[in-house]
Length: 532
Image (cartoon, rainbow, N blue to C red; front, top):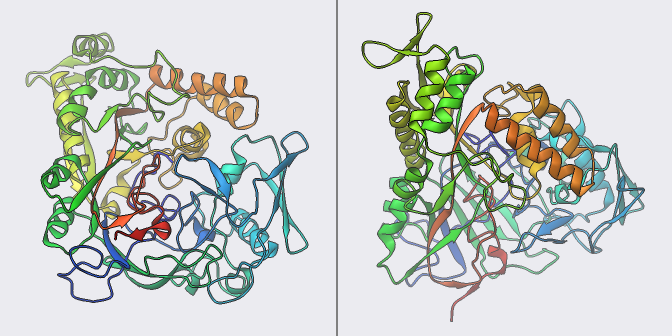
């Protein structure tokens, strides 16, 4: 999901992987699962923490929510499989009705039985305008949800929405707990109860989340009994703590992951992703909002150099939210690195070089700030490279570091080195990133992009299940975005993780932007077994 790349690794996008691990001991200098320690626990370092653990506010919407389950789940190949439902849904009425039969004998971690009323309560609460859920737009197609007894749920749609089943990996909340609280501020947001393979045992904000195996889980209690998600925002600090033995694993940028290549006790995992880095070009900035400047930047940036030098080959150039190796990518929308062409566009638009080489038009200097997240080395390196490329075309971009609390109020007028990306259906990314009606809605459409042709195509793509019509719609979106770029897409990034080689079972899925949380080699930690 798209332009909401960011601070929040948002509650909405952070769905899930709170499966990380706490050591039995509290000694911060020892690991739980590595080098000689008991292997029924693990500690993993990640970069972001969620704002909430409530599915009603967006947590667990993309699956892999270890405290909760969805009706369906994704397997290692990102194919849908049953979870709280016993089978994939029965689809009827021309794609307008989805019927799920629920698994029997499932209980929440407090022992209360799970039934259809919990599913109905979850989805109805999310759709309630009084609920502060930033992901409500993603369920726009949903007209109603009804329980048929305790064991069947029927969803009715307003229009045929092809990827609806993928939306039902969403975590399910317990009605008997959440209906008695304020949905936005109640204790459940920090003290969740679910049906998932793990239960939350503690959350020290800004420091760690701890989990224990759920002995009541319908699929059996996990062998890895205790987990800690250590929240370490600075890349260098995460690498240092992994090397010191404080962590069993961590997500790291390529340059830092390379430092562990000679360590035989550790293994590096590379995950293919939809995760992109992009520069928002805010419409309300007199320079960044100019179409000629945007088109020039699209040509001035050297994407391949960023892949080679910043990512050390662990990624590929990005020309939009859809990776070039996706079947949804619109061939022919690749943009070449063409500094001469960029200068020509600016010349023809009246942006003329001033005495210091920076272009000026009508007394306006071609300059604007570009913010990136403090402590995020990849964002910093991308921002610096982007500013350097822009300077060669006569555009002065000043890079600035800050927390999301500092950056968010400036999104309307200042550029941001953002990120996003969601595997699966193209609607998941492109609608939130580009729909004009979502401009200014949190981290949706951060550039306040407004293109009527794109708006129409986005609606066409989500309101039909005809494959040919959908492909035509998303081809249109990508081609229009190339002609009228409100963002400069830079790279799609492979995610790198370094872990103690102590368990059988770790692996990777195709990952979204939010990594180390809902994904990572621990996406299936409940299936791990200690190595003999």
